[in-house]
Image 1 (tube, rainbow, N blue to C red):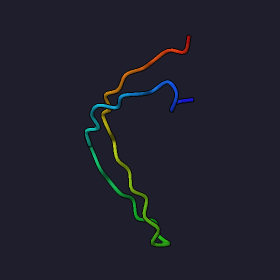
Image 2: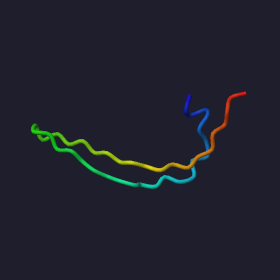
Image 3: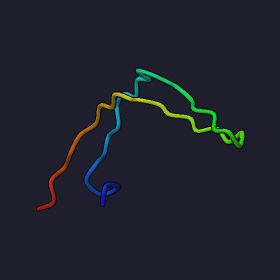
Image 4: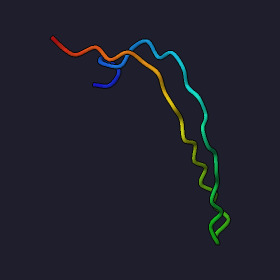
Length: 43
């Protein structure tokens, strides 16, 4: 799983944010991130 192989999250940088408003007033938020982490392959 990702929790077992992705460790040591170092940086999360927000690159872009936006939102979309539907006719029924529901709102969808989106965030684009740049992540820095270590990958540990399973042995």
